[in-house]
Amino acid sequence: MNYGGYILFAIQFLWQFPHFWAIAWLAHKDYDKAGFKLLPSREGTTKFSAMQTVIYSMMMVPVGMLPYYFHIGGILSFWVLLFCNLWMVFVSVLLVIKMNAAAARRVMFSSYFYLMIVFLTLLFDKI
Image (cartoon, rainbow, N blue to C red; front, side, top):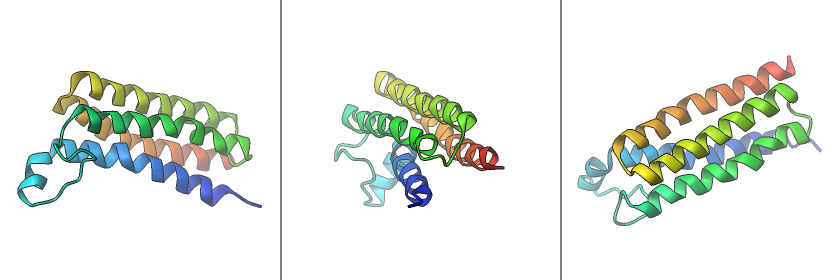
């Protein structure tokens, strides 16, 4: 059975949480005024919300190894995905430590590049 689609889905599924919560962190007041609750904590930009980004970023690490394990990607994608996933964990931990907009912005921009780098690496590893 080919697990490629499931693995790509899992990567993008886990990626979305740090990505969207970083955006929600930065625009929390605007979303709150409009009546939207986008962060996992009802109180908004709390340690709990920041820890959620760390938890999902940590879950991305083993999922990032699945393309290599199931022969969807090669050794290049293994190392690139490992680095990208560890970087997401690192910037998420910084958000927990600093608890400010600059750290949330770093998570947000890292997540933009993460998805592009990961999927392009998986593509180029198959060519």
